[in-house]
Every structure is written in C-alpha cells, then in structure tokens.
Amino acid sequence: MTTIFAVHHKGECAMSGDGQVTLGNSVVMKHTARKVRKIFKGNVLAGFAGSVADAFTLFEMFEAKLEEYNGNLQRAAVEMAKQWRSDNVLRKLEAMLVVMDKDHLLLVSGTGEVIEPDDGILAIGSGGNYALAAGRALMRFSSEHLSAKEIAQSSLQIAAEICVFTNTNIIVEEL
Image (cartoon, rainbow, N blue to C red; front, side, top):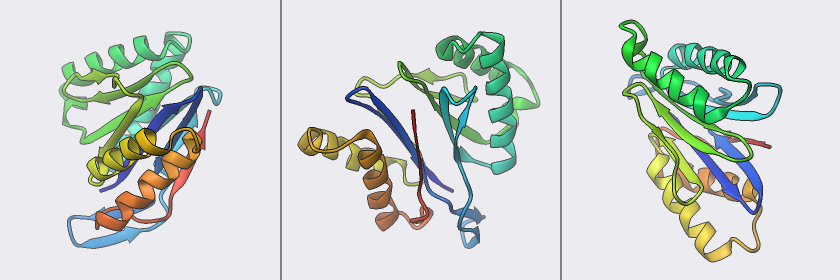
C-alpha cells in the first residue's frame, strides 16, 4: 500500500510518495521504497501505487510510450492505457500511475482511465483520499504562502498521520 500525491501550483510541479511497502495487510516489508521518480530525461514525474513489480513494468512501458510519442504526455498516457487495457497479460497488473509534466497531470489506470483533474491535484493509493483532502485545504487556505513542493510534502505528511499504510519516509520530486 502507498500514497502518491501530485500538484500543479503557481507554475510549479511537485509529486510526493511515501516509502512503505507492505506484504498483505499486516507486515511492513520496507520503509524506504522510492515510488516517485523523474523519467524521460527529467521532464516527467511518475508515481505508482500498487504492486511494486507491476509498477516497474508500467514505468518502463510508459517511458517507452513517451519516447515513441516524443514526450507528448497525453498521447503517451492514452496509448499506454489502451495497450494496458487490451493486453491479456498487462490487464492483470495491479497498479496505478500518476504522471505529470509542466503542462499536464494525469491518472492512468489499467481499466483504461486517463483522467486530468480540474484543480491540478491528484492522489492515489491507500492514503490518497487523506492526502487529497489535505492538499485541497492547503491550496484553498494557504496557497499564496506555500510552494508546490511544500503542499506535496505536507499533504503526504498529513496522510501518514491517518493512514496505517502510509509512512513518513517521504520523497518529493519537482519539475
């Protein structure tokens, strides 16, 4: 289980993820996993929630689509979602991706969804709803004082205080 949070704010982009890897619902196997990373020459941020092995497959697949479509995030996401949904082996992968560049923020899932939020905030994973609520409150009431990085960090910190599947070993990446 995990939590990934991403935000576009005042021309800045940031994505945060916790480090917890659990086995089933009762054992923490790792505290320092890196679930958010820069890809495509450092121009795209990607974060995953779900099975780690499946997520690595999806990272590789998504980066290949970015290469194929010359960094066009939206086109790469749509083509990946189509392939993911239609392939019998890929369809069994249990993970979700959040991807972003300077212009777009997208959720990509194996059921074919490619969703761009209205408010520039996305969160996935077990603590996703907690991080999303925290992020929206921070944007609404403190946005003129906080950077995208600070919103991403604080939203995940708040989620970690509530969700037992989210820890405070938080990685934040920025574009």
